[in-house]
Structures are given as structure tokens and as C-alpha cells.
Length: 206
Length: 365
Image 1 (cartoon, each protein chain N blue to C red):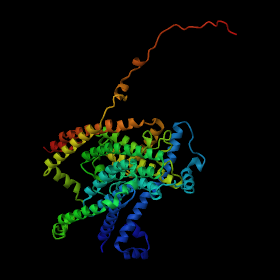
Image 2: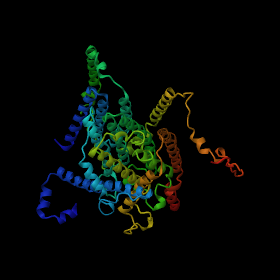
Image 3: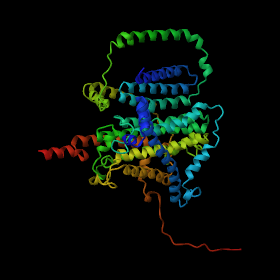
Image 4: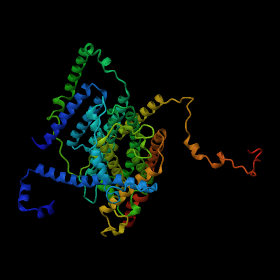
């Protein structure tokens, strides 16, 4: 077994174990952390395939941003584990049936006859100065530029939609207006009055 | 490694050659890692001393001056004290995650140094996607804070963790965009290339064409490290000490180290991306021993930005939480996007530092 294979098997074992942890952990926060571990392991496997851009982006986007928000939400949920487990045995046969169906479908689509070693030859390894970021960028902005732009427009629409769905202005809330605060001058708030100095007569000092 | 061979006796060279190749690679890299880590950890220890001393002088105090001459042994004494204190683990908390969280904050801050170039060709790994690697690692640090807050099983800790998570996610976007500007200016994700592209002295470093991005990057860096004035995650006047309220002894010390390791990292990155790294500010004297290019410039620039962190802490009052969010989302992100557009126009029109090609072509014609 070469060093390459050792690394591959180490990370794929880690990935499978972590993925099992995601679905079997009792605590949802642990599930999220297992999912982070799964992403890490898959990113390491991508690195083995010389896809360093995709590998690092996976960590950057999913681990660094998406999963943080996931964790944020899951941490705040008050989940009653016993109540969630009540119907487990009743729904188990149904769930198992669906799982088997999914597995069969996946084997049919990504099985060895379509994605096996024969269907895909070993990718040739590139020189040390080969930058797959550059290559990916070149393909994205030339051959697939319409698809790329379309995807970004769809994402933009999704962002706008999400914001309009969740944004509500409560009429009674008072907001700070930083612009107005910055524009305030001394003359607006402070009035200096000229007056003669006054002394109060001590009337009946004891 | 060659000079080491010439020094070592023959039997050691023979022994080295007898070792299998993967052990040789492993040993060599471990040696380099130790060479980077040991000075770095010493710096971390002495930045804590520098902070107390500098803020002390700014507030007309003396700062630590009891342990050793002028207090120089203070960080060592602190370390020994923290090592011998008991680590108390809260009841009903998850022990593994509770102890793992500090390591998770420190780890990424140290791992990022793998791609930092100290001089031309002097770096542990010359990664093509070095900039992305650093972005990915700096975004990892927040997990330590969140997990610490959650595993402590305390309300104050979880409030600190939530604040920190929201803040880091907000400022990371601005930070990423600022680095996209650097990437556009240099045309490479490789940190060595980014520095090489800034060749030619003080005025040709990226700080000038990317001035708004520099401001956004550095302030986001302060926010990302949870330092004053953005230290609401600790917020000792509101939520006691935030995410690390339940930590004691060495577990707390690791959080403390991570904070300073992150400061050094952000300072080093600012000097790499915007101030030419190991480049000398006197571009024409590149061969001079002291005024020419060299690692000492990198260290000087990094020290200056570390000083800025301490200076900020002594100067600014803490931001209110909603103002932090406003600054991140409504000020910094628009600023970076506008400057990216401006920069793109400058690149296309070949204005400023991108005019080199036109000058060459005019000279050629």
C-alpha cells in the first residue's frame, strides 16, 4: 500500500464514520459537528485528486460559513429528544423502505458501470505549477459564462426573496439614524446666552 | 539541508540516507514546523507582555515590572501559574468538546503560517491557492468560540458564542471581498506572487491603490479576532467574560494564546497583502543588507500592525452590538463592492499600478 492509498483510506474511513455519526448522534449539535468533520474529510480527498481549489472552497464556504450558521440555529433550538423518539419504531419500516429505494437508485445511477475505473481513466497528474484555480476560472468565464451568470442571477433573486419574506418593520420601534447623528452641529443643540452675572442677595443668613 | 550534512559526522549522514524517504520528508518538514512554531509561540507570549506594558504607558501606568528585570519574565511566570491551576469542568457539560474548543481556536491560527512567505522562497509550503487556504483557515477559528460557548453549559457563555458567531460571519464576507481586491491586483492566489507583484518600494505596494480595502481588511481583522473595540464576545461589563467564562487554568490559557496568535497572523497578513511583506520600502536599494529586502522588514511591518491592535484597545470604547452589525453589513460590504468595481475599471483601463503594460508597449513602439 503506497502512502497515497494510506491517506485515501484514512480519510475515506473518517468520512464514512463521521457521516454515520451525523445520522446517529443523539444530540443535534453533535450531528452538526460530525457534518463538519465529513466536509473536512471529503475536502482532503479532493486534495488527493489535485482539486485544491474545490477542496479549499468547500472548507471556506461550507465549514467556514454555512455550518457556522447551522450550528448557530441548532444551538438555540430546544429539542426534546424523548418526544422526537416516540414514533421511531412505528415509522422505522417506512423509513427503511425509503432508504433501500434510495440506495438502489444511487447504485443504478452512480454504480460501477457508469463511474467505475473502466468508465473513468485515472486523471493525469499535472506539473507543480499547474493552477487549477486559473483553469477553472477560464472555463467558467468563457465556455460556461451564460450558465454561470444565470446561476448568479438565480441566487440573487433568492437572496432578495429571502430578505423580503423575513423583513418586517415594526411601527413602534425607534431606529438610530447614524447619518442624521453625524450631521448634527453644535449650533443645533447648544444655545449660548449672553447675560449679566447675577448675585443673589443673602436675605437672612443665620 | 546541505549545510547540515557538511557539519554532521559521517555516521549520521549514513543513518539519514538509510532512512526511508517518507521519514526523511516527515523529519524535514517537522524541523521546519518547529523552526516556525517556536519563535511564533515566544512572540505570542511576549505580545501579551507588550500589550500590558504599552497600554500601561498609554494610561500613565508602569505595567508589569516585578518579575525579572523590568518585568521581562512576566509571560513566563503567567504561563507557569496557568499550567499549575486546576481546569474546572462544569457539570452537565460535554467534556470532550469543552476541552477541544480551545485547541480548535489555536490550531487554525498556527496552521495558517504554513503558507506565509518569510523571504523569497522561504516558506513551509508554496501553495498555489495560498490566499484561499488562509481564508479557509481563518474562518475556522470561530468554531472554537461557538463550541466553547455551547459546551460550557452556561447562559453567559452561549450569549458570547452567539454574538461571536454572528460577528465573525458578518466580517468574514468583508474580509474575503477585500482579499478579492488583492487577488485582482496581483493576478495570483500565491502569496509569493502577491509580494513579487508589489515590487518597487513604498509607493508601489498595494496599500495605495487598495486603500479602502486595506481599511476594511484591517478593521475586519480586528473584528475577526474579537479584539477591542469589537470584543462583545467577551463583553466583561455585560456578560462577564463571554464564551470563556467557565474556563480556567491551561484551557483558558490556550484561548488566550489563540487570541494573540490570531493578532499576529492578521498583522502578518496585512503586511503581506498590502505592504509588500519582506520588500524594503526603498525599492532602489534592493541589494543593501539593512535597507534592502529582507525578513527584518516583514517582522517590522508585522510588529507595527500588532502595535495598532494594542493602540486600538487603549483608545476606542467598545462598539454596541447593533452598531457592529451595521458597520459590517451596511458599510464595509458596500465599500468593498464599490472598490472592486473601481479596481476592475482601473485594471481594464490600465490606470495606476496596472499601467506598466502600456508604458512598456509605448516604449516598445
